[in-house]
Image 1 (tube, rainbow, N blue to C red):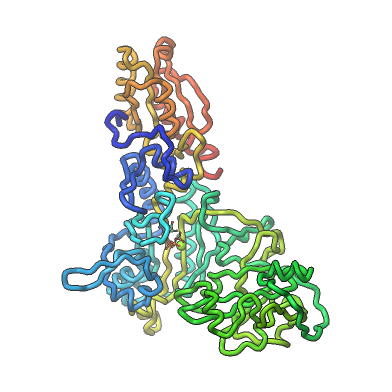
Image 2 (image 1 turned 180 degrees about the vertical axis):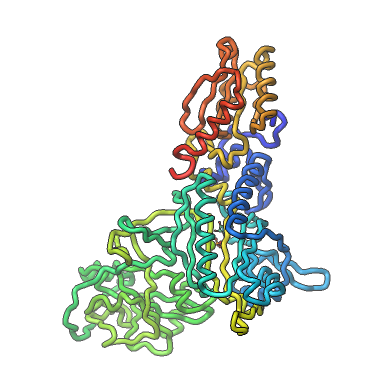
Amino acid sequence: MRVSRLLGRTLRQEPGEAETPSHRLMLKAGLVQQVAAGVYSYLPLAWRSLRKIEQIIREEMDAAGGQEVMMPVLQPIEMWEETDRRRAFGPILFTVTDRKDHVLCLGPTHEEVVTHLVRRHVQSYRDLPLRIYQIQNKFRDEPRPRGGLMRAREFAMKDLYSFDADEAGLEDSYQAMMAAYYRIFQRCGLQAIAVEADSGAIGGKESHEYMVVAESGENDVIFCGSCDYAANVERAQSVKPPLPVETPLPLEPVSTPGMKTISEVAGFLGIPRSRTLKAVFYMADGNLVFVVIRGDLEVNEVKLKNALHCFDLRLATDPEVAAAGLVAGFASPIGLKGVRVIADDSIQLGSNFVVGANRPDTHLRNANYPRDFSVDQILDIAIAQPGHPCPRCGGDLRGTRGIEVGHVFKLGTFFSERLGALFLDREGTQRPVIMGCYGIGVGRLLASAIEAQHDDKGIIWPVSIAPYHIYLCPLNLDQPPVREAAESLYQELTTNGAEVLYDDRSESPGVKFNDADLLGMPLRLTVSPRTLRQGVVEVQSRRDGQRDYLPRENIAQQLQARLRALSSGPGTSQP
Ligand code: ATP
Ligand code: MG
């Protein structure tokens, strides 16, 4: 491809709207163009790279027994009502109304449609297992589209769905997908770690997310420094620091004028926050919930939402708290009536806590559970924090940020039961099919690859997903010998199947080198009056900047060998 003809210009200026390094570089390199918030056109360079990623995904899905199909974007809303996911997705779901006033949605995911597809074709255990996938654009009306392709409203996803007759079959499918995902990310030059993930409202049993560790990631990941425990903070557990057990003392009021927060109360009374109990109020589908947790811990809203089985969860406002007869800042679980109370199990780790008295400017000392108050549910609803001991080995937990590039999920029979995907087992008993789903965000993978591999000059593509392999960069093109040499090199390389981006513009060397670095193809080939005099071509590796001079003869073969070495070399797969 000739740069002079290529659709998409590199920008000299910094794109103002960019939020992350990959977003900035994709705009600067002319890879994508925003059409609306979270909606993008992919220009030729990005599209070539995306197609390579898709091809890698396809090969690995096919190797893992996947069959590719294409399901519709338009989905009847009734399917989403049968599974109650219209409510669960809420405003994320894009809907349209047709001329007959039927409501349809633009698929944000395809569990409903694929279950509908498969139930016609699966009658007996002999029809199982099945692994069905597609690569298709999904639509989600994200509240905060950001980072370019990272969080878009229209984005390509590979989604595979597995159908098995029993739990052992599901486990096989799950393991096959995890192994395929490992290879996909590795082949794309990405180091992604599998972390335990929340399985949400569907009540699936097991779920893992694949995270690319990056500063700009939107997920907090907790991992152990000693063993391989790793989890999304939404789901992560930890050993909560225990406190010495004391003899319970009698309840006693203490004046705490104006001290409303845990820090204020603890500071005023000269005690650690862990010696207090914190009250936090939520509205769950419109009902007030009183949450109690030890003062040194924070409420994990994902765990809380799962415990409450609710669709909508938000902090309650002061008037909502007051309407329940509670004094905000001094509310107490002691003597409480008519409000649902959910407690974190940390309230059992310690004794003689300071807690609100439900009177202005007053707290109580020596509150002990269950002596002084009762709760409706007690379970782990705390955020695991770096520094806490690991729940598996007791080692030190650490925190990092990650980009979720993929997600695998054991769905069980949630969809097959609701949508009637049944089969006859060996004994002739009718059972719901056991399902799993497995997604990879194709555009997010591309953005993550750039996020993980760039420098201050630009993108550093791994060979496997680089739009082109070679940036042919002749200098002083106005000199006929250079022009001739460059043209013949371009012809020879492309004839031999090399993927070459040929900078045929009459720009200065500075401009061309800057663009070569920004666009980041693995090898830069320089032709200049000097290299011509010496009968060589200059090859520079984008990754390490190493420069060599190769004889002009057999140049295509020599470059192929370099690219092969780069593909298996350090930095391309597991940094
Ligand atoms: P997130 O938590 O980031 O919103 P999700 O958990 O809702 O994502 P899944 O339903 O698990 O997403 O979708 C599978 C994959 O699709 C994700 O792992 C991610 O790589 C990709 N993906 C999801 N939402 C988006 C989006 N808005 N833009 C780009 N890719 C996305
Ligand atoms: Mg997910």
